[in-house]
Length: 120
Image (cartoon, rainbow, N blue to C red):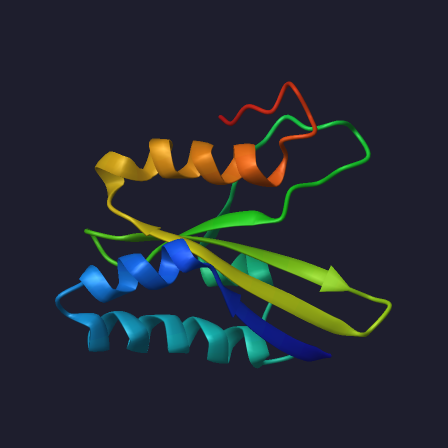
């Protein structure tokens, strides 16, 4: 299965603000290498699946990954069986104190057609 990596403008903007950018990028690359490994189960990557209340037929693909004590990464992992690929989208880098605000903004943007989107 092919892996496609994407990032949002918000992610790129926040990455520029990080002082120890190289360490941060190494951590993200480590995650990518694990995802590339065909025998790596997503459940073993210490990703936290985001809980959202969506209509029954939809399952959110948003995750949070604790990079270190200061930063969280909000990302999605979407399977595209038609083209036999997996799309990894990096949405944002947040500090714990701004996580809820950033997460809410992302989910509202992604799922705006559903009126009752909430997260736990």
